[in-house]
Image (cartoon, rainbow, N blue to C red; front, side, top):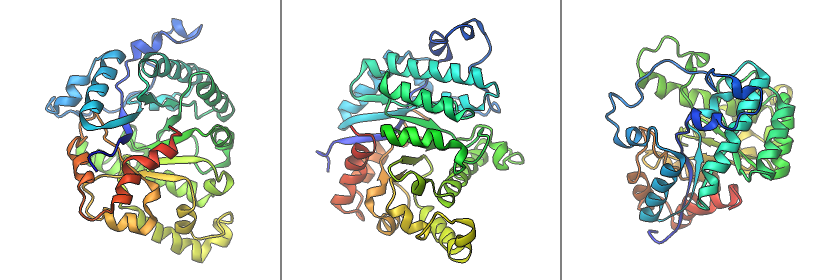
Length: 347
């Protein structure tokens, strides 16, 4: 397996607002406010004790690309799909016209200052989710003119849950163009998820990531997004995968008892519908029930993710652990490390 090329389906860049600001169109280029809302001042890097996360702060796009290339060459990575670190919060802007302007600037920045420097690192973009028609137009521009392969959507800061038909213009355009929509875990504005009473970063981070993803997964499955848009590519990222057997059992039970009235688009139970869908999930190599989860759903739905350079990444240990995992078949490893992401991102 060490000779098998790897596609990292969820790495990151640390984008700087000053770099994005250069791409703001008039009159927004004369505005000095932040480009997206902030969060509680949590100490994610724990007194700057996480070396990689600290070292990458403030690096230019070119410097980050150089570091990515060094890592990829050393560890046999063919491609790294990189998600934003802050720009996913753009949909939390309440001014829709400003939200659109910032989303456009972000996408242009990712294309011109990251992707243009590498044929191996591919940054995804962001969308102005509070205006689905304009988001669909921006998605088309970003894919057809800028060459972006996908977009990050955070579970918080949205006007409605992602299963709502409100977002159908976005889903229709993404399906038509083959763009990936990555629903990515976040702890930002975790109060929306009921975390107001938590008092440490560990509590908030542990809780908010799965809570947000499971909320949006519930909405998208029960409201039949994969049925309405069967070729839509969806990825649920950065909470691992071993929650799926438990949670799909729970959704299956509700479908059996109430689905006729409350999940009318689902002709099959949620777990079977999901097995046939283009829904993907990033894994954590150290999950104790990983092999059982992959057996339950099939290896075609899972992705390798490094999470470089964030504080909680476990690279390169997670890659080596997955390559040498004693309970996964060689076929499963090949799909998780390479083939699934190759298909998902049309590389």
